[in-house]
Image (cartoon, rainbow, N blue to C red; front, top):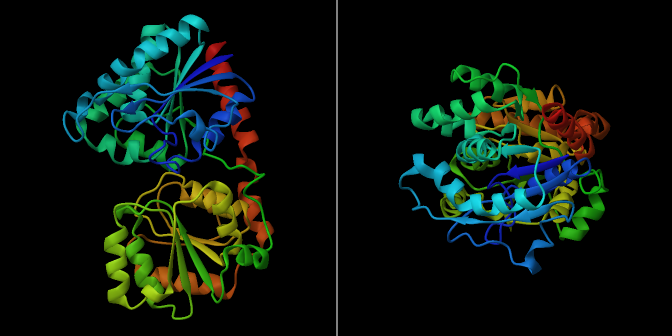
Length: 376
C-alpha cells in the first residue's frame, strides 16, 4: 500500500520541536506501508536542509516540503487553496513516479481541506485525522467549518485523537459519527522509566520537589495559573521545557509573584533530552484550558512520572483514574492537586499501564488497518 500523507504538522528548521510526534507517527505507519509525506511550508518558513533533517526525519518515509505563497494573517479562508497551489506540482510528480493508493490528511483545516482537493484530483480515497485546535479553534469560524464539512463528506474514513474531539465535531454539526479514536503515541525506546537520581545528575538538578511543564508557551496553556499554584507550594521548584510568545510575560509574572528564583527555563529540547526531564521530575503538570490528547502526558505516563492536569479534551480518557484532574482556570485547586500528588504519588507501573497500548508500533498497525480497509 502506498500512502500520500499531507500535513504542515512536522518539525521544521525554524521550529524543530513543533509537532515532534509526527515523525514517530509516520514512521510507525511506514512499517506497514510505503509513505510519502508532503509537508507544505509557507514562504519564509524554510524547508529543512539535508544536514538538519537527520535529527527530525527517520528515514522510514519520504519527505517533500513544497512552499506556497500566503500573506500572514490575510485571506485566511483561502489558505487551503494556497496550500494546494504550492503542493500540487510536487504531489503530481510523486504520483506519476509511484502512484499512491490513499491520501492521508492530518489536521482538518487548512491541511485536511487541501488534502481533500488533492485526493479528488488524484482520484484516490481520503482519510482525515483530527488533532485538537483544528476542531476547537478553526471550526469555530463558520467559513472554515463549512470547508471542513465538505472535506469530511468526501472522506472515506475519519480518525480523531480523542472521543471528546469526535463529540466536538458532532456538536459543530459535522459528520463524525463513524470516527475511529486513535491518539498520538510515543516511542517506547525513548520514553520509559529511568532512575530519578541518575536523571537528576545528568541534568545537574538539586533540591526539589521538581514540577515539570513541557510544551509551547501559549496563552491557552495557562502557565500563568501554574505559576500561581507554585506560589502556594513554597518547597517546590518548576522546570519549563519549551518556548513561545508568552515567555516574557510569564517571566514578569514570576517576578511579581516572587517565584522567579524557583523557576528553571530549560528551553526547547529534543525528545531524548525531554525524556531525561520526565525521569528527573517528581510530577508533570498541564493547566491548559483546551487540549486534544496531549502527547506530553502520554510520554510522561510512559516514563512512570505522575501527572496533574485539567479536565479538558481527551485528558480524562487518557489518564483515567491514574491522576488527579482539576477544572481549568482554578489555581487553588491545581495547587491542592499538586500537593496531594507529591505527598502520595501513584506507583509507576499503574501509570505506564495506562499508555502501553499507545506505543508507536501499536498506533502504526491500527492506522495501517484503517487505510487498508479504505483501499480495499
